Image 1 (cartoon, rainbow, N blue to C red):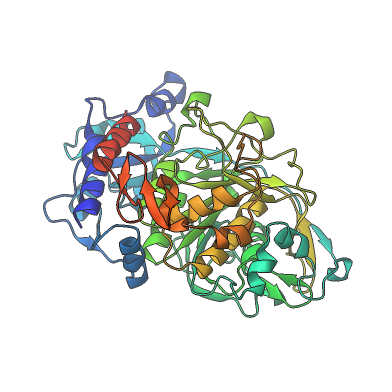
Image 2 (image 1 turned 135 degrees about the horizontal axis):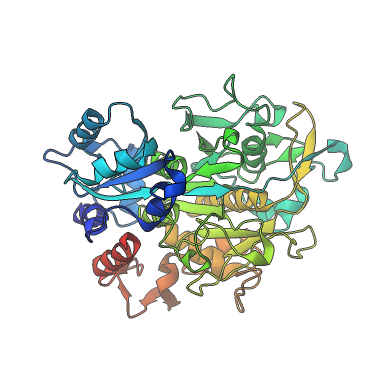
Amino acid sequence: MWRLSLLLLSCTLLLSFGDEKISAELRSTLFSNANKDATENIWVTFKDRGSNPAKSPVSEKAMNRRKRNGIINGYNEMVSEEYISSIMGSLPHVIVRGRSEWLNAISLANVSSSEVTLLQSLDFISKIDRVGRYVKITREARDISPRAYKSSDYGATYTQLNQINVIEAHNKGFFGQNVVIAVLDSGFRTTHRAFRDIKILKTFDFVNNRVEVDNTPTDPRNQFHHGTQVLSTIGGFDNGSFIGAAFKAEFLLAKTESLHFESQVEEDFMVMGIEWAEKNGADILSSSLGYRDWWKPTEYDGRTSRTSVVVDIATDFGLTCVISAGNEGDLGISVPADAFKVISVGSVNANGKLSYFSSMGPTSDNRIKPEVVAMGGDASVVSVTSNDLYARNSGTSFSAPIAAGAIAVLLSAHPTYTAMNLRHAILNTSNNAATPNNQYGWGLLDIKKAIDFPCGDCAPFGKCVEEKCECDQDHYGELCEIERFWFLKLVLKLFLFSL
């Protein structure tokens, strides 16, 4: 409990350092003379949890996963209702878009400069910032007949799964069973025949604040297209025509993107989706919503984007986050692929050659990106215009879920692995592990090798010596899972994020 309590406390206390509550970005967009009538969606971060913080419910599966990852008897504290009520009393017309328990913050819609000034005067508020916006590049799918593919069982998906040895893992009896995968995307429709047997545990639409994740009556017609095709690469099953990488997994589906916003997405929906997935027991999170926005090139550092910070917190809780590297080629990766503990995924074609659009590293602080690659060039997906046909589509939007499904297969084989165990096994068995670079990262995944990897439990922080873990100088524990001075390092990281 003490580790998680300190972590959550640091998220709130350290963000309150500094006299200036309003960020420079928000001042530049909202307080200039040219924008007198402008409004912005904003983050409001609180200095603490209030006088009587309430505990947030966490599923039993999430609690068990946290314990396996070293978070003992941990719980979340909710954002203060007292503080929210005070804000709404002062600004009754402002709408609360969402809440982040991990950041101890709420997002508010369409706030004016005068309203921000009033918020700044409230002593329980430590920081006011603009909600980040991201511009997404989309690609169009092309329908094909399933008869265009070979292989009596896998059909359309044979190449993309065989390339990373998922089929060999399936032959060993590992299909993603007993693993919960959360998928964050634009929406989902599961009427295609490949979804007949899919196991969906829970859904939520963060854009419209409702349970259903299919289109609303006012959504653009193609709102569900992207998420549906992404989901199919993991959980689809139509024997002889199409098989997803982890078709026996169970799923949490979150709608965190709206196509109404002129191809722009705002980060608060994704932050809320990640927290929701973790609390509801997800083991692996797959998101193809990687974006670039108005940050400076120097700020793709794993600390500037709230989504990147939240991805790392989720990983500490044991949720393995698999994220698209982006479709910007040599212009660089997107966020939250810049996070420190994420598994970001680039794209190759069927021959293993890097796709022209696959975003390359490094991060602005010179870390190698992406971590791995999988097939995102002409990947096979379900059709969104027919419930019986299949299609091809391209982008790291599809290499990432294929990789996520493969990692779920690895977790089926090794159910005691932590998030960092999985990351370590994946990186060290990919085909470029000896010479990782900023095009392919550690290379194409090889799930067969990852399953057979010796001492995978030593995590990234130790090596196997005579069947025991020999830890590096910064870690200790039977599995090298405990970081020395971890809290001081977290304090420094969150302090730098708050500046």
